[in-house]
Amino acid sequence: MKARSLLLAAMLIGSFMYVTSRADFHLGRYLKPISPVGQLWTGPDIAHGAGFGTDEQNNIDIYKTAHLATVNITSIVMQRNWFLAVVPAKGTGSGIIINEDGMILTNNHVVRGSREVTVTLANGRKQYKARVLGADSHNDIALLQINAATKLPYLHLGSSDNLQVGQKVLAIGNPFGLSGTLTTGVISSLGRTLGDEQSEGRLEDLIQTDAAINPGNSGGPLLDSRGEVIGINTAIYGNGGSSEGGNIGIGFAMPINKAKEIIEEYRTRGHIARPTLGAQAVHVEGDLAEELGMPRSGGLLVQRIDDGSPAEEAGLRPPRQVVIVGNYQLGVGGDLITAIDGKAVTSDADLDRAVNRKHAGDQLRLTVWRGGRSQEVTVTLGAAPEVL
Image (cartoon, rainbow, N blue to C red; front, side, top):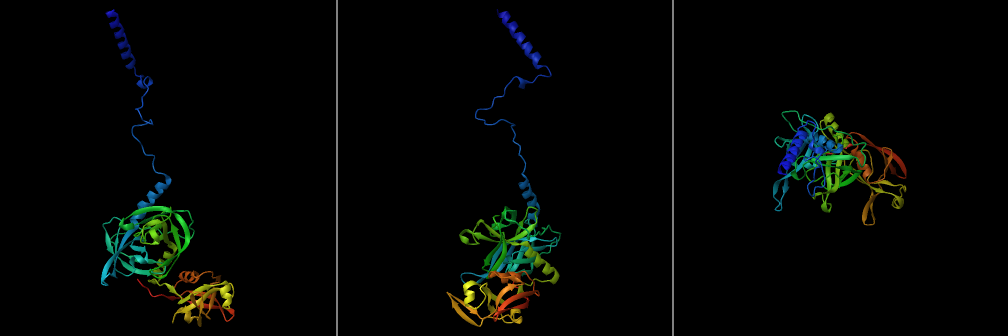
């Protein structure tokens, strides 16, 4: 019995050794793998990334190039402290290198009133003293120059003429001093107008975006999906409605075409001169216009003409008396501007908008209602004093 058991064992061992020694033997044919308890998937032991999506790769490619041409700008201005002593204060913002020789585009409010402007390149190691070539305070744009020893990376300026609400945009800058920060979003709206408290004016035709823009982003590029600059990040709505707070998804950029006009003016004339008319007006229409003896369609009623201004030289007439309308004083008896360059006026902003689309020395054709009839007044625009 014992001998038979030994013989059977020997036969089994021999058969196993013969089968496993064959070249075409695969253990996987006979053994079913057992998943560990609790494992919810089967697959390779090493996970492999699926790669970047098309939109992700687009963001990556744009950033690799664009952030190298986005600089950090530090300005030193003199301010009064609580004890009315004049002390230096530091401000920060961003800028866009627009040619290989170191010309930089930024916001005027980033460098306004500065005694010293320092530009730091994207690598953080190279710093340069910058010279302010000129500024347009009404459009919040400034042009700087640094003198670098080597040619610099720069961004191409695109067009802001055919932008569409919903198109993708990317913003690069130095929010809160965090250099080289990229945020993405879409164009939320076009043609926005904001009050500019610092210049007591208006910023016209702004691009609204939900790409996160925070303090320190000012002056940096707003880019399209081709990596071209379509705007200059300019303003935000912060928490509580203050531009000093954090981003809440409402940011604004100045269209790049306005900056291109200023750059071209500097290149051709050697300076930046904002056009000026020297007149202020308020829009009236409907019943109020009729009560004042003007056409019901109304227009811009001139309220003030500056002495020696282009408006005065052209013969535009100021009000002769003041009346009370509700809680407001209104100058009457002066010219009513009904059209500008042949286009009917519809709001208070029309006159400023028309002037800002011109250059100093250009002409503005005004249609005015005077003495019960319409007539034309042609004004040659002057140059406003440059304030840096």
